[in-house]
Length: 413
Picture 1 (cartoon, one colour):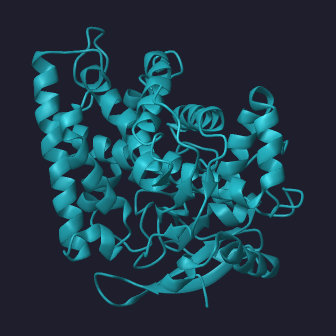
Picture 2 (picture 1 turned 60 degrees about the vertical axis):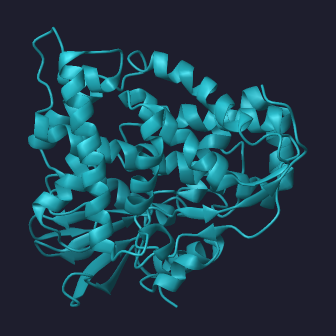
């Protein structure tokens, strides 16, 4: 079974990574093809599995661009790319302008109030299931926690949370029938996109008239004469934030709990030193789980990299999980070690202009949630199989649908 087979992505994580290791040992580039869901014709691409190659491609946007598609192996209409990808699917100067506007609100200083509220939101979410003694961790924690943070950040009322959750499940669902609600994938995707667009446009209109202390107000209203997102740029950014802003945290929580269940000695080591090991343990979860499966870059002119010749238009698919287990960079790369150092993983993307803007927020969320799990549900254990998304093809995010757990019931905080 090859990595282009949808069934491959149902295999356990270590089995998938073993196949990528086999390919990487032959070459950091593997030529492959997948069927284009819109045309039925094959799309050729190169799978990039070497750490050095992922790093080099990431830091050279003039040679390897994002604007022809960064979140899809298939070429998509520019309107569709930007509708679901916002500036992640753009190149400079448009990328630099939009990212620069948003980045003003993503500095640690600007995020301080939100970062403080992450603790409160996590407490609320765990309160909702801590008395039960058992749960589907994805349903009760991995799904709601990071998305509630994003909704509060944007100023979206809690009454609209289920709308946002259902729509993001469709967009993150990679065609999984359980997430599509009986619709075909394209209908479901655009329906979900329009729901989020309408919600965000209404909120932005309100904040232009009645600014509040939230990110939406900051993006559409300021007194400093700085550039702002145009009205037609607000909704695509929100879709990006609602999806990319929660997928890393959401998937990392599920994989992290599963990894701890598989590595009880590492769990005990972390539990014995929460202050000293939380930061390196979070980095190790992101390295091993690599929640974002891939990003695409497109070659802008004929060139050679690591001895491989490429032609203009060639698609390069950067597989971050494979790069994160390159033995040239990581000692015993398949081992999960909560004290691993150094740990220069690419779980938040490689260097360059498209490095994850929300990495600081994701790290804060993961630190808070695992600290609370250790303190409030110390005997939490996995009681069944982790169920991955049933993706139609190669999933953009290695999402998890279900993870049953049990624990000693505790009182609400």
